[in-house]
Structure formats: structure tokens, C-alpha cells
Length: 130
View (cartoon, rainbow, N blue to C red):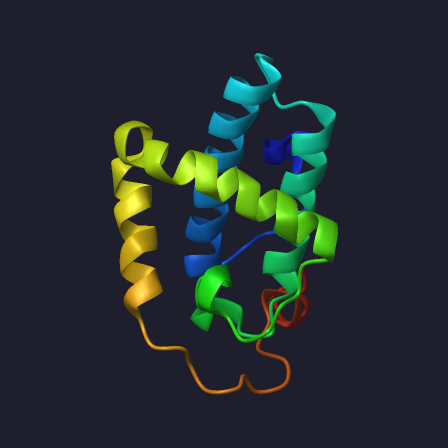
């Protein structure tokens, strides 16, 4: 399934965060796995990240994953995420400067209070009938 075929819709800042993660994964995969499109491992990671964003209890008020007090990634995905972001992060400034700067600014925002029940993107989608 390609990213454009995804059925799950992300709203607001979650959509921007997904675009940032997707750009980082593409940079990492191209340089490490030498493929024109995403390899199976990177595609799997990107789908996992999309699901985690959809289910984030903070919803659109989500802080960046690095400063979030709720650690929702499984250990192996968390390690892969750190590896991808450490490699692709500095390269984002050249390839995707606007996404990179938005992400850096988002890291400076204060962490919101504990989210209310039903604030996730998933709950919002269900209430809109998607």
C-alpha cells in the first residue's frame, strides 16, 4: 500500500508531522538501502508511525515525539526512529527546509497538559464518520 492509498486521514499538525517523518524515512532509505522507492522495512516503519500518529492521545496538540511524556513506540521501532531521525534530521535542512524548521519550532513549544479522553485523531475520524 502506498502512502497515497492510505484510508486513515490525519488532521492538522498530525498531517504535517507525518509529512516530516515521511521525508526523513525517504532520505534515510535512499542513502542506506539504495532503493528508488521505500524498502519493505522502511515502508513498515512509516505505516507504524502513521498508526501511532492516528492514535496519539494528544491529537492535534501533540508535542514532538522526542519531548513527549507518553512513549507509544515499541522498543524496536523507537530505536529505528532514533536512527532514522539522527541521520536524516541534519539533511532535512537542505532537502526540506520548511518541514525541518517547523519541526524545530515545534520542539520548543511547551508540552500540553495531559490530554482529555477522546482527543486522538482516531476519535476525531470516528466522530466525523470516516
